[in-house]
Image 1: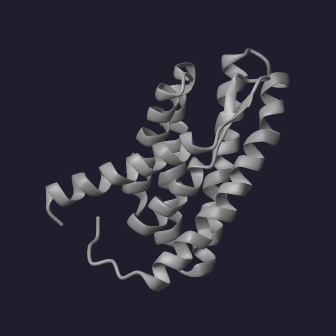
Image 2: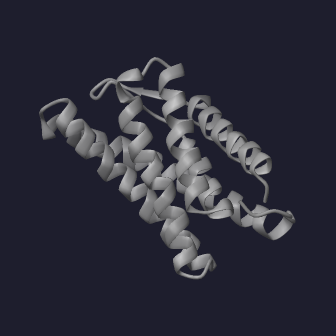
Length: 167
């Protein structure tokens, strides 16, 4: 794949993650954050295009959504947590052979990392693990909803849409 094709593909994935993150937002007053379904698009990006694409789309797309939505205080942390989440999903999927089961488990591992990552960020940010504990439930719902949406969409696309390029 040439550089232009790769740039366009990554840009589209970043935009999908950003819009998916901003589309449905539920504010969480305890942590001054929000619940969204952007992780579904990170799952799709990572499984379809691999760990680097998942990392770039997840990190940059989610951080852009934070900046555009007034959650700038989370943007740098989001870049890191969501980037690693995307990389984990794509890397595990490739490492374990790209099977249906590998896709499910790698997606669950990635969103579990997201929950843990935000718990650690919020523990530091608010100097209190008690506040951060409240976020586990909200991030867990976000993770589960994103898995329920993202994995079936990936499965459908991978079975029914012929992709002619690799990133």
